[in-house]
Length: 321
Image 1 (spheres, rainbow, N blue to C red):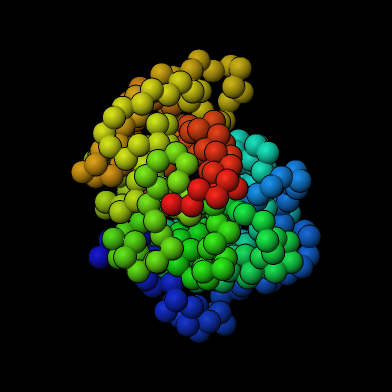
Image 2: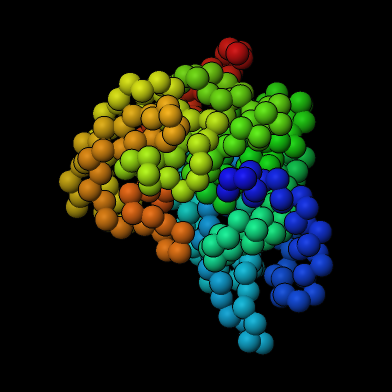
């Protein structure tokens, strides 16, 4: 059984295990989503929203009693800062004219992903938090506007869970789901009735997903059932050219642009990126040379921002297909 189907299939069962283990671990306080401090919000008075679930910004950390914490404390400033940095950064990159909502949540640490079973067990708690945040958002913040569901890495795994649980009424307002940095297994694609792979640049009610690598051997997990090229928005092998700065860690003005060739390998369903010169992209613990997981939003930021608005415009015109 491959990595993502393990993570997604085991989350529900792991909730029971997690509750049993709570007494043995120190669990941070449960976020109260009626508290404005538990949200990053940028209300641009736009006609649609982005509900964004951040990636893993937390590592294991020591507590005063000598134990090790595996979940983020959403009320601790030191742990909130990196989460806020991603929220603000992604909003700046892709938000455009859309409203942006992102909840703080008790994400599990990066060390949780060193094994499939450990990740599946620990994902139950953050998934529960984001599920509550999304319910609060729908009930109290956005009862009627169109929205984009988006998540990256750990956030993408949780976004897939939300999509699989989504009611028809809520789905009728979903412009698209952007599941970035996570594979979608055939089992998930078959079982999630609201998961429809994107086939072009302006279809709506669809799921957009991709994973970027130097070559197919650099993938982190088996073949995804959903993949599209975010440069030309094609699902075939036609190569697209992308010119962009290689690193989000340096000022854009100090970087020379890379000219990248980006194509979809329809055998592996991985996005093959040639010409990338970045050297600071490998994640600790779970990263791999030639796997561009940490750059999935940065590299395609302009394409994502334009595409989100394009799908919103198509949704508002009523071109549901």
